[in-house]
Length: 111
Length: 117
Image (tube, rainbow over all chains, first blue to last red):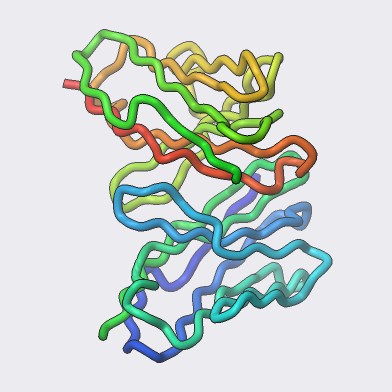
């Protein structure tokens, strides 16, 4: 089955700096890669996603890049703000919609 | 749009009893719903995939007789934890994939915190 590895497990940045979280996946059949933000005790919220036929996608301060050959994808957050502090999960989905999640990255943005 | 609700939001039950958790898509129809389990400070683990009108597909290691899933309509899936034990205490989250999205897009419910005493 699919295996998703996510790094780092914790990340602390100063407000205004950039944050990068990286994920690798094992199943070449995976073709959809969402990123979720989860605040303590709350549901995961989709923040950005990318499909396998696209190399990069950007939405304001958030961007995702995908390297299908290397089987890795990354989340980039620029101009970080304290409200960006949360746990971020990457996931890899197959056509069946089955999601395999990474272990999560706890991002702390210090004011 | 794309709102998913879960009920109850939290429940405490005694060991040996059963608990039913409901997952509803409020403003869209969902052919497929997913059930996840999340332990504190850990990732989401897929338990089963639920398709309307058919039997759920369980992930390896998940006991289908213990975690009963019913997806009776395009807006409702239920998870029943039977003969609950303290080790079943966890945060259970469902997600729903709108019809026509190929199950790519998933919208999560707020979760149900189950505590078994």
